[in-house]
Image (cartoon, rainbow, N blue to C red; front, side, top):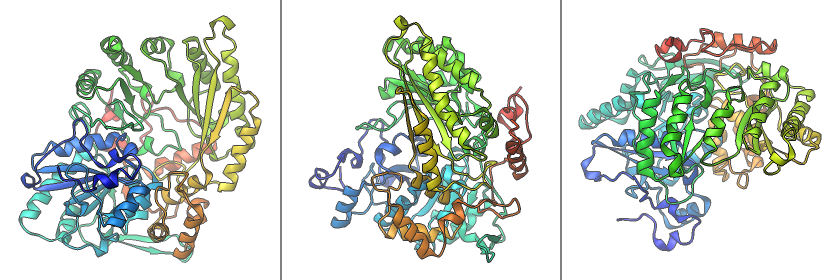
Length: 614
């Protein structure tokens, strides 16, 4: 097989297996036998990208078509980039080792704002023009999807098409159109125009933006008669009928999440007011437990993994959880295959379930309390009490667990120092619950690992209008919590405050941010989500040279009447609902979850899921 990089070079870089392909269950096709070539690009290293469920789904979804070959590419680490630039090697796919410039589509999944410079860097390494307006007929269509695509503006100068929604819903129609378009010998520009017939696709070149003197958006208007004023996301309604791969790519090196992944449902009933995913993926659509057990059987058989991870935004909200958990335990406990539950709500936790799962292998338990006081948990609509938290932890300790992970946030709207002190107090109360167990029944010392992320006001949340704390204020708050903790059993860490500040800028950026991202990339910024490579000073220079400030995007409270950079995108949930929820937050009023009482958020417009459940 042809190799884009020689063995000599591979032996000089860290983790050469990142660049060679050949994994278990990799799809192999003859390039000459397909009409469409699609490069699925993940703008981070191989180990991160290979852990992403969306990659696994779309890889096999696209490759199920005889006329399409979907291949993968990841961001090369700095040592490989240096070798590639030195030796004139263009960025290539893992499957056929072909240059990305030879593909019809180059698609990026945008999962984290701090990967944006990697998108530019990968395009440049591939020899593809970075600016969409500069691309020629021979260059691929650049298409981006994923959670960050719901505010596409910070990358709008570089991307041809943004896909809003779930890939299984529309990609077949897009590829069918492209195949016909290609046979007819039509131009790139004509294809982009024909995509305007679809909902769910945003093509920046067909929209013009103007600004007020204060830098806010004055108008956002289509410049083509077929361009929609509002683009609505596309979804699949029946999760039992939706495509799900019968096998997974099995990497040859250790990756972040090396296990079978079962997707229980999409969406979330909870409505936590800071959580973008909880709103952009509405409505909740579940798979039956029978479907999940069949998928588990196939995936375990074809992968050889020894762990099954049950994933969703709130795993224990799955309505058939007891049947699924029991079915998996009965099937796999004698084979040494463990079940992991990454996202549990303490109020739904049961000792019975814990005791069943621990029969195979114990791991630490993770609970997201988010805030240290009841008032602030009510503000964010977390809908759990301190009693719930302590009771859940006590159940865990009684069941033999001794490691608990607690997730919190710093900088939430209306937060006071008393709320921050509450984080320390709550963690210490959890430790005290452990010491209520008789000494002879404590198998080992207890550990509470508490970590705090910094609040980022995200689009399509009730808090999208809020100001974000400065990085100096985040640091003060993190130190305050740390200094309040006196028990040695509690370990507290908080996220890099500079990174969180930049994330806040990107999350709510407009088109003018494109210039700053380009400037930062030219200065050498890439892998900005990696602490050892992140350079905040270069980013400040990049914004200054672009004639805009980071504070304008991150630290400024918005007015309800301001045109937001993502107002031309619809996730189904209405702005009216977000405003109502924000007003309720300031009163510390909670909202029932979707199964308790429908709040008419707007997701009914999709015609399925929990909105129409019994």
